[in-house]
Structure formats: C-alpha cells, structure tokens
Length: 122
Image (cartoon, rainbow, N blue to C red; front, side):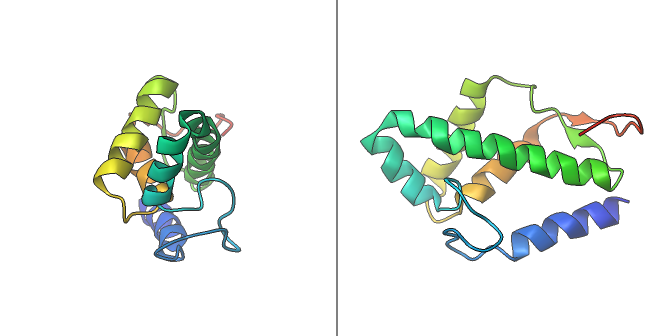
C-alpha cells in the first residue's frame, strides 16, 4: 500500500510544471510559484489567507488520497494555522523558485502521522 500511495503522490507532483499557473490539474491561488506568493504577500499580507485556504484544501486532498489507498494520513491540526502559514512563508522565502504546492507538500510531510483506521472518514 505504501507503494501505491507513493506512486499516487509522485504522479501528482511529476505532472506539475516547473512554474504551475492554473493548469488543467491544478487551479486556484496556490497554482503559482513561491516567488509570486512572496511578492503578493509583501504587497498585501492579507492575501496570505487566500493562499492558505487553498493550502488547507490541498493538504486535505493529500489526506483523502492517503486514506483511499489505506495509507496513514497526516494530522493537519498538529500545529496552529499561524504556525503552518509561517512555515509555508519561510519555505517560500528560502526557495523562491519552487512552486507554492511544493511548500505546502513540504509542511504536510512534516506533520505527525495518523495511523490508518478502516472506519475513519477522510
């Protein structure tokens, strides 16, 4: 099962263009680069809420995929929204050429693992 989950995640990430901007597979505020996020944030810090809302949906989707292939999920409530936003901001500041999606995936992988339970709903 780990193999199937890893393949699913790799397929998702491998199909992302180097600078994903509203592709057929990835849409919304997060379909951008870290550099553009950083630029937007410096112009108006309130824009981070739009990006983070997208990030929450993306991480929830990663958990749904994990659960569907009987794989452990990640505890999205392990840290506060503010801590998660800061982690994405820090990642993007350090890696401006990466996609915003990569920043979100990076913090998602750092969350504690929640063991798979058959009766859990994603």
